[in-house]
Length: 396
Ligand SMILES: Cc1ncc(COP(=O)(O)O)c(C=O)c1O
Image (cartoon, rainbow, N blue to C red; front, side):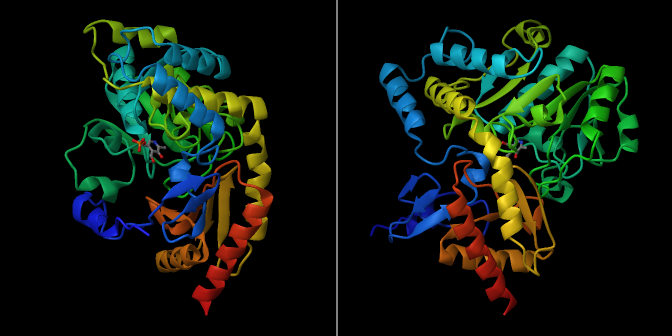
């Protein structure tokens, strides 16, 4: 039984003093296997990444085939690279309306940076509107539009000209004006602890953006690729943004992000200056091949449609006196316990019993439940049972 625990703490830069430190030797389906032989049900999916579970055979095959053909060839945008072209074409078919021009990058944060630059260039404006408690990433630009203010304040000064509004505050929408380049919104706020849009809120945002000429940017990094029960959350809410941002589940477990807009809007990145937005590894052929396999599987099986029923099953099973609320859409769920200490204790006990879950970046009073969409009813029953037992033990 080899353990890399000591070397992990010695040589990997740490992001907190309390990393989960779960050692994983192998992962398959919804399970993680430790070197000590434990089998753990994964209720996190690498934070909404492994939507088809770990080691999905169609994704693995696509990765192998592409790796044998070619790895990296050239910076994004110069060569005609079949996996990129096929993926971009398929995304354009599946996304609504004019979202038909895809700029591939490597991560969610990088896609947000690209969307921000695109909106500024297209509108010639520089004010940006974003929402309190939103999370858009950790690079300087993405952090500037993230609304977890105590989290971001250590890194000030951030970008100027960002106006924060409250999510679901209809009156606040009036602050979007003819000076606004774009509005960044997660259709469902993820790291805030799964906050759903109130009826009509996204539609009202859309209306105001049309009225003022501001571009509406949907950050679907966490909600995209089936997580909320439709392929994209924008389908569920019937609102088409001017720019859509994806990453996480898009790559089927490989690193990939994209910002997607119309050809008209995207065309401003070609000139004044040319090459004003470039990335070496964006749209890596192996990542695009994995993403295409994952997308085709989602599309042919419509497995994401079952996420709604699976999410409801979790919510029904997780009735307990300590649970204040279960919020969510599809398999993006928050079990609100109203107390950060209880959340930490529950997560620790659950892990000992064979379930890994998490809290949220901007909400440590709720437990994140976002398993692979492939989780079975039996696995939901088993993991909910473990969470309930853990809640009982914390209460005793
Ligand atoms: C909604 C949202 N946007 C952007 C990001 C940043 O993505 P990445 O970590 O790939 O940079 C995240 C990451 O959690 C996210 O949840």
